Length: 225
Length: 218
Image (cartoon, rainbow over all chains, first blue to last red; front, side):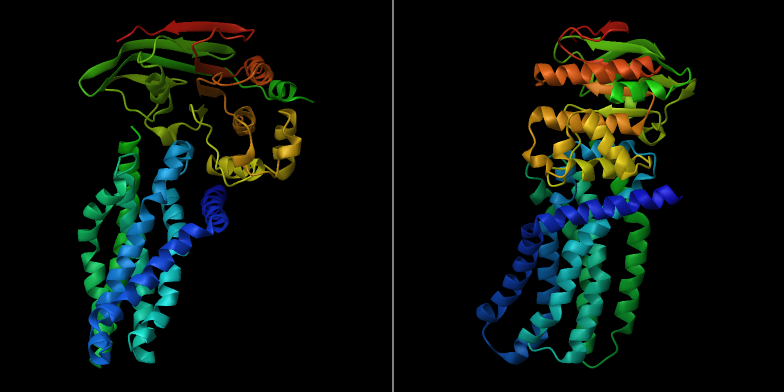
């Protein structure tokens, strides 16, 4: 049991160390998020009321696209350098190892997106309370994006134009997180309680936490067969 | 003490790998058609054959990475059910499983932790030193040459201390010095009662109980 924890932590720190040494990958994702959100006021005009009412959808769709941008790298590099095969040969349950990799992915991409979102909310005219809801919703929602995205990344492993395929495969699966997450912020905008949306988003996170690593592990085994 | 001597110090009790009638199909084509083989402690099996004869596929079947259509692989009489059941073997594919951005030391520690083997810093340093990499412990693997990378991967193989080694083209793109090192490591492993299954196009320059299996062109 102790060595299982050691394997999990070692894999997590390995991926985090690599991400830290190649910061540009994470920064590109964050930069993409910031730029896309900032383009909307330029595109639709500076009407504060309009921007405010669009903010939840704009922020969530941008977060979704930014996550997609980073998914291809989740397994493809490991697949190229042969460490993915070693992952499959490990005596530990593959879903748990997958979870370590997805967690590292979320810490590097999803978490920064969530943390920077209040600033972008400010840009779109959200009030402090609404920014809090936005942050909460993204903190609950971006792990779902990473977990579900892992399935797509595993299924498109080693395929040409994998990035586009991931988008086609995964975007429909992102709909529940998008509806609930943007819905939570919408509710806050209209001064109703976002509690129901956030609870459902939390339930969605638990559900994907249980199912996605298994699906990803199965997909990896099939793709490396 | 060299890697060879230390490997010889850790004796592996008599194990056995058996393959019976393994059939693998790849997109309508039968890549392996009823392969039988048997390897015991201290033996090296060279899998030979032209390109496309299914050498790599056979190795992946032995690891449990590829599921055969028919036939079975057993280790000490127990069937191999999948890769996670492969705690008796160490596999080295045709690319060295190393992360470019990490140093050899970090690579090896991550590799061993993943395989459930605890190693301390000293053991890693010793293994790298034995293979002539003591000055490269902290350099990112990206800056190492092909031969040096292979040595790091070999250090990982030695550190795991598994009885069965499965190596895909281990001699490819190595210079004479690196081939010598690899030969020494392999001979040490065999002397300790370990088993090696490898593919290569060249004659294997290893002393010991070497056999070969010729896979026909499909």
